[in-house]
Image (cartoon, rainbow, N blue to C red):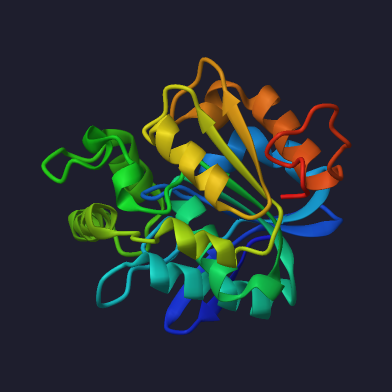
Length: 255
C-alpha cells in the first residue's frame, strides 16, 4: 500500500508490504525503492516491510538546501515515529546504510537489529573512484530519476550535485562514535565492493555487537547479483538469535 507522509517539510513517499515485525528498508543514494526488487518478496514474507524514498529520491521531491546524511537520518527517525509508530529493524544499502547508522546513534531506542550493506561510517571508506566528483553519474540513475521524480528530469543535475557533495564530504564518524550503537548489527558487503574491505572490517570491529558477512563473487550490486544468498543471510540475521560458537575469539569474553 503506497502513501505519502509529511516528514517536516518533505512530502515523503513510501510503500509497505507483509506482516510481522516492522522492517524499514533504506535504499541506496541516487536510487529509489525499486532497488529492493530482488529482496522485497523474501523480506515481506517474514516482516511488515516499509520502503520509504528519501528526500530528492524516487517519488519524494527535493527541497531547498543541501541533502545531508544528518537530515536523512532525522527523516528516518520521523518515519519511525510517525508511520511505524515505534522500534523497527533497519536495513540500509550503500548511502542508506550510513543513514541507518546515524539514526541508530541518535535514537537507539527506535532501532532493533540493523543491517549495514556496503556503507561507510567515514567518507574515506569508499574506493576513491566510487565518489569521484568529476565522474558523471551512471545513466541508470538518471533514467530512474526521470521516470519517477515529481520535480521532473530537468531537476536531476541539481540533485546529482547535492549527492556528489554529500558523498565527497560526509559522513565523518570516528571509530569511537560507533560505541553508541546499541543494536545487534550485521555488516555486509561484496568482496569486490566500492567500499574497501578494510573499512568494512573497521566498521565491524568498532561496533559493540556486530557480525560480518562478505558475499563472495559480488560487487556493490551484491543484492542484485546474488539475491538468494543475500536474502538468506538477511532473514537469518533478522530472525535467529546468536548461536553458541565452538571456538570464539572476538566474543570469547562476551564482547
